[in-house]
Image (cartoon, one colour):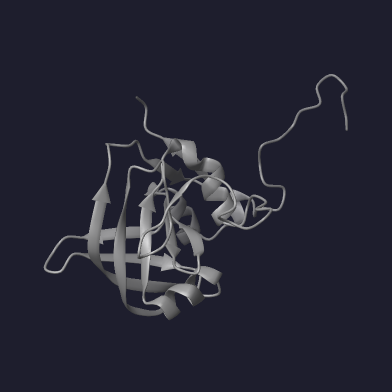
Length: 174
């Protein structure tokens, strides 16, 4: 390790495509702040998802873009249901773990406290979760567009959101 004066630790991804070489669509997507959510299903399996949309109506619906090759998708497709938990600022490491960016010795659910639900585990310290019934899924861009009906919503206290913006986590100022 270099400890010479002026040596710095860089907090950028050395494998990332330089911003000037990224596609304009990727750069546009990066400029849209998105809530960070955790999708889980019985099995259990889970995935961090930042492309989640809730649509009120009769019935209430939830849409999201997920990785079609994820363990989560295989388990959710089989179970036909899943839970969606909005994550907060204290969940950065959890979000990275379920995104495959942080080690998970013993498995994704080995650390932290979990609340068992009929739809999948939810972090016990989260501000709530929604139970969803899988309606359909289809290829959409490089992802899978998942459509679901929200069957139940369990909200605790108001919680600050964890946001994903320009490739990093952010939180709202207090």
